[in-house]
Structure formats: structure tokens, C-alpha cells
Length: 122
Image (cartoon, rainbow, N blue to C red):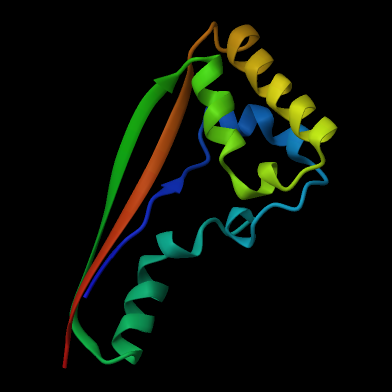
């Protein structure tokens, strides 16, 4: 069994944007506890409970810099943004572009953590 999941990570850009996200229906994975798939102990225990042994876990980090258009495109793909009414979505995406340009000088960090879980059926 292989589980390979890609998850945005709370990086300096996300922290700067957090105020603009107040009041939005964020996915449960973006709660105070972070993304559940990044909880190695929990995920390994769930796999073991599901009949897997020799469970291994690794987290890969991808760090890149995104310009305003790329960051807008990335956030526009997130379900919590896609579900916003048009005017709210455009306002948020404009705020994202402005943050990249003004606070980050045209290129903002984007950090993605990708957990990989391996296990064998007993």
C-alpha cells in the first residue's frame, strides 16, 4: 500500500494572508491542529489498525517562490476559494495578488509538504 498526498503548508505567505481568510469556511485540515495527513503517529496507527505492518512514513518538502499570477492561480484552485460567491472570490484573489506584490516584492514563498506512507498487508 502506498499513500502519497500533497498538502500546502503554513508558510510566511499563508500567515500573511490569514487575516483575509477570517470567517471563511476553511477545510478541517486547515484547523489549529494542522493537516491530519501530516500527523505521522496517527496515520501509522490507522494503517496498523487497518491490517498493515512495517508501516513507514516520510514527509517531503517542496519550497518554491510564486509570482502574483501563480499564487492567484494556486489559491483559485482551492475548494474553499472556488466555493465563494464570485465577488468574494475575486476580492480574495485580488488581495492575494496585492500581498505577493507589496509585502513579498513580487515573489512569495510557497511550501508544500508531501507525506508518503508505505505499508504491507499482514
